[in-house]
Length: 324
Image 1 (cartoon, rainbow, N blue to C red):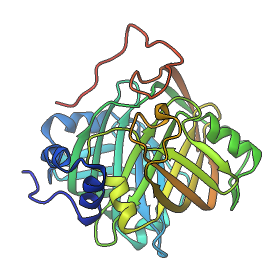
Image 2: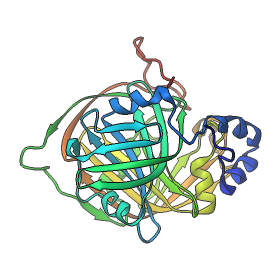
Image 3: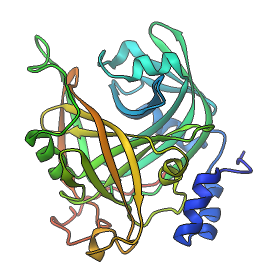
Image 4: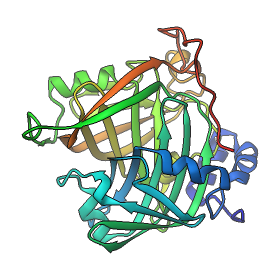
């Protein structure tokens, strides 16, 4: 059943400012209070999920959880169960402490190889030490735009632990600036004060995220589905959590900070696909952590929708996206 009022005040504010209120209203028809039947099997096949969560101070974090396919299993269209015994947990990830304080969570199931993605927002309940259960409040599929195709070949347990442990800081060193400057994929978590947590994807050609200085990033806001879930949350609650997955070194960089929406800054139209919109992140702290397993990825191609000149041609065997 579709929800009657899918948007909160912040989302409607951004839709109006962007001149996309009517398109946003039409797009909102896909938002439901249960998972669509065709997505149930999709969830169970996934080895990865991005999770947004909120800490006691109100900061929001984006985390990634890997596991054997089947570690996420829909019990029914309104309930997803997580088997942590078949997941690869990172104990230092803020997710685990956050969900003990605040049950709200935003999930993004994303299959990079096929460019299919599904967003599910709800509340997590700990059943026991090895099981979590998400009670679904909103669910909807997203379009395949701006996703770079990668296939997770497999994971291997790190023998003797990861080569380097977690690192933390407040400003970006040269290595982290290099990682971000070369990235083609990021994930962002946001939350409305009286609403749910949202986890979303952003992608582009390498360099689409600009490192302005050791404390500030600038991210272009491309044309999308006009829902403005992320920017709408920012309008009401300027807190954000970013996650960069280092596909080569099996490490994760998590950033927490204050976003600011920038309108009409388009010095180069190709940077935003013509929207003129960006958002800056003022970084307050970061955490770089090794994954508990070695994940091996095969890169296929960049999205043909990425603004700017495509830097590799899509392979002819490109897989079709969409959830039925």
